[in-house]
Length: 86
Image 1 (cartoon, one colour):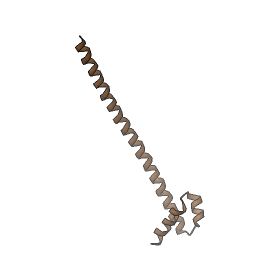
Image 2 (cartoon, one colour):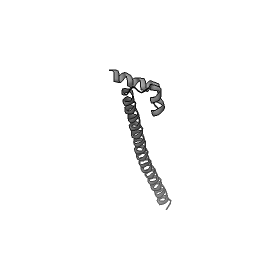
Image 3 (cartoon, rainbow, N blue to C red):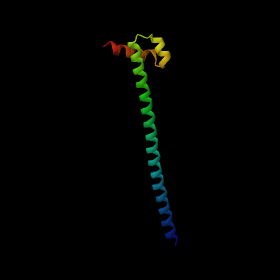
Image 4 (cartoon, one colour):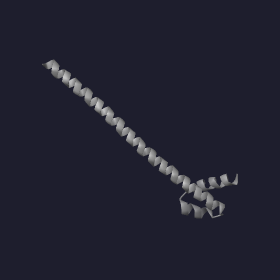
C-alpha cells in the first residue's frame, strides 16, 4: 500500500514537472513572438523616419527643422546627409 502511494506521488511529481516545462515553452514562444513583432514595428518606424529625413535633406530643409519634425537626433541626420553626398 505504501509502495503504491510512493509510486503515485512520484508520478504526480513527474507530471507536474512536465506540465511546468510545457507551460514554460509556451510562455517563451509567446514572449518571443511579441518581442519580434515589437522589434519589427520599431525598425519599420525608424526606416520611415530615415526616409522622410533623406527626402527633406534633398529638399534642402534646415537640419534643425528636420530634427524637430521627425525626432531623429542631429548625429543621425548628419549621417544620412553624408550618405546622400556619396
